[in-house]
Image (cartoon, rainbow, N blue to C red; front, side, top):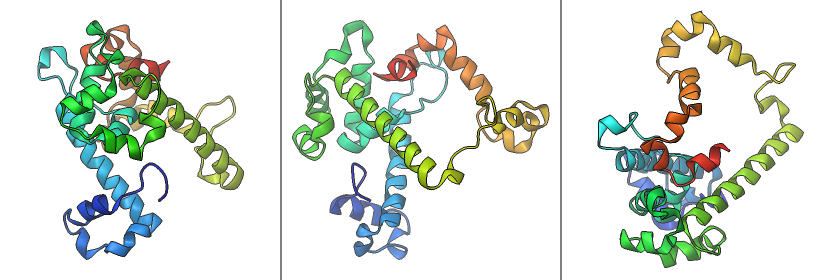
Length: 224
């Protein structure tokens, strides 16, 4: 895998050291795109757990359950490490003190992270001006949005069967299935978060102004 999620030699070795990966992958597999995907998925899974633990509000009366990391949170962890990403998200979410205007290097360094090394590896994201937390998060959002659109275009042109099918009128078939009583009451449905309630909750003013929502520096901006 080329690009921002490519595993370095050290990161690949960390992946090999996880569980029984040494029996399934080898050092030379670092150049295998499919093996790189497995390593990236393992990294994202570990980052998700660390970020959720670090960013969940410890005061249950002010929270709405475990924190669910955003794409921006996860990419910050990829660039900076989970500990520094947590520090950046907390500082950026401190809207009362304009935390988003804090230089991202300040937050990373205070958490023990190596900002110089991260900037060398990710100059397009960490070398922006002004180098504030809010601007870095905005840059990540913009570049990811462009990448998602490019992927959708390439899929539509080359393998349209891989895209979600949308019925006439722009409504995806799964929506009717989800909204049906049988689907919502099925065992499989109960194994997932109730997506309709999640959408209603997210769209409510109370949620958008909640402490958990503010914990992510660019969460509200992402929704607009």
